[in-house]
Image (cartoon, rainbow, N blue to C red):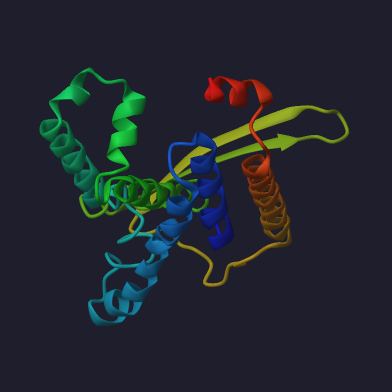
Length: 217
């Protein structure tokens, strides 16, 4: 399965790259990227008390519907914003999106939805998830591997979609942090520090002479 480092790092970097959200909001709601893994607490109750696999890990929190409540929330907030300000109907999407940032729970609802769904997507390609739970208690695992022959330079695609009843069978132990992911975290921190440094320097630099002369006029 994808580890916590992957779930936290990849979605946050991709969302930051869009420039659609303030960085502080991206980081504030980042814990929702690993919230789905809390469904492991249902293991004991479902397996030992109910004697069923309906509540096993990769079931309750790993479904395509996990982000539905928050998606409905930001859809309702968006519609309410548009209704309250009719002038936004003729505004550009950029202006609408900027206005949505001033709506209480507007950006947070979108970020929570993106983080929740990103967890499901990443785990679906790393062991499988019960994508349509509770409507259908069947796991889906698109097992796609691209092999590279270091001697011949040839690529070999090995696509396979696995399905089965209940939650997918996973190893009880998995590496929370791998050496590769330590490198990912290190590079991410370097990139973040570099971005903050350049942003800090840009804020301290004086305005160009031409702009200052125009302001004086």
